Length: 76
Image 1: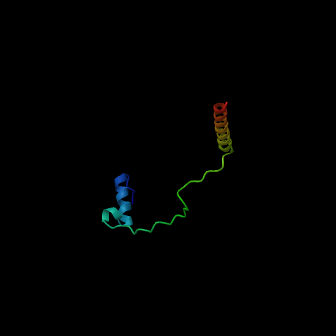
Image 2: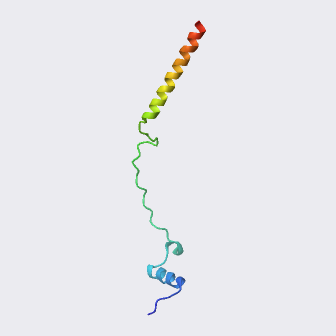
Image 3: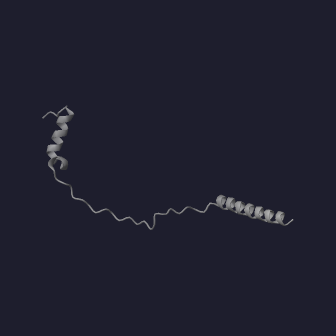
């Protein structure tokens, strides 16, 4: 038997061999329950960044120094 050269014929032949598509025949496929996900929370935890700690420390020191200077200059 010669194989069909037309793509449509080969698709139709495969569809007939499988018994038809679920969409074409109107049958719904059996639904599986979704697999449970083990997610403790939706918040993402980042690793400790030493550069950010250093930058925040410098910002805090600069803020404290500015407040000390403002208070000291008001007193004098």
